[in-house]
Image (cartoon, rainbow, N blue to C red; front, side):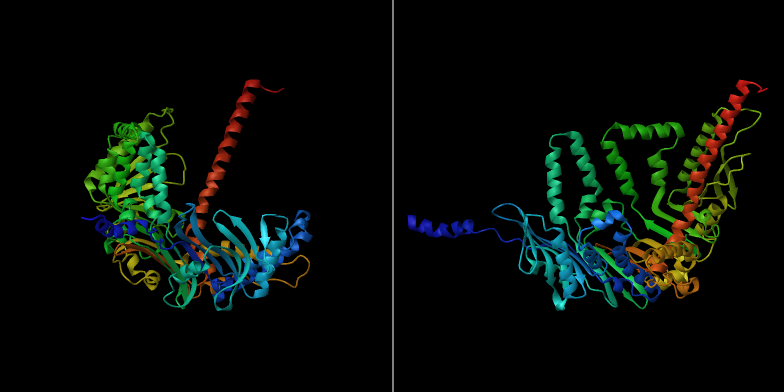
Length: 602
């Protein structure tokens, strides 16, 4: 073969080797956009709340006259505050890979606040420019836009016109056409008024982090084991999943839908079950529940975590062996392996009227006899340990775990014979559920419900079905708050917050400004209230979270506070008072001993 022929044959390959690598596709790392403040609080019940929040910037402008230290505040700072309280808001970051010449990441970004008009955006720009007038690194255009040179490119800060004649103030970096494309690609609301939408995909960031972690671990066995532990947990995989979310308002309330795409493999590592909840499992929660959560988990993941803990060193196995030696119970094979992965917690009227003492927790049981034997051993161990506490035989013992069996249900109750303690936490065991209650009554009532001897269950609750009627196909988690009923306890706290805002935004310089009544009367707020329901379910390999709530922010606040904050605030009282009483008692005893040692005082 001639030299010329060889050149002709090889030239295409040579030409291909000389070609530049293909330009990487732009990847949206994060994009987010919200509605205006007035749009977010458009519900009629929130009108007073919206007025109060809109008055906060006005009130802040008065503070320099009242607080001496604030009279040195930078000129124009309040123009920026005005804009921050208006909305809408935007944040977007797009990656274009690394620069082939410098190796620096190529990033386009935007952080911006919407303005109702051009004058407002330019006023905010002028205010910030004046505050940064002495910074030599900042260059300024004739139109007032500031420029800051960074290794990633020129950052422009100032007012700019957006789509549809809108005006914005903020910082921009790189190719803004890519930013516009990222925002245009956000999911739209299926109906009603859009409140916010966003997306995130950090896969291009997480992958280098994994490589860097592996390099840093190097030949260090402990560091490598720690990296393997984190990798097996799947947390980094979860963070690298593409996600998007959208929230909107319609006549039925506020709704949100979030999707973690192709999440099944990563989320199963974190214990998210592959199987859905069943109607029988959800029916363990009564229809009169005020607040409830139930989830189906993968118990194999928990066992896997124990195995990974063992791989980090002998300490984990030593602790497990010590537990088994002390109790006769194998934590892994007797307790964890006896559970089926269903867990629930709820408060209801049937378990105690809906207060703190009505809360119960449940764990699904698949091996009743093994679980019953383990509880019996733990009960014996606890009582044996209590019997070893030194005591005066003439006074008796004040601590034990009592066992009773009522209507076929085993109950283990923390008891303090002779001491008037107001708490008696109780464990109940049914054929399919392990129940823990704040009282014997709560545990027994919950056990009856779980055994099928209560009401029709949560799926028959009108408040629940009004907000979720799509069944349990693929559902692995349910969260529920009956805001219409729980707001009875949360309304008082909500009015305190409302009054705080009312007084906070009024002017001490006159009585001409005020938001009116921030929180409507109870009957007005409660009228037509809808429950809060959040559902996690599999749609193929996507993990989808759907939330349906009342349209009013105040209703949702009162409902959540009444369900969780108000009942559990009762715990804070004994947590503060009991130690104080104990300290007082000890002081009295010490004083008495000192007086006795001194002898009579003549």
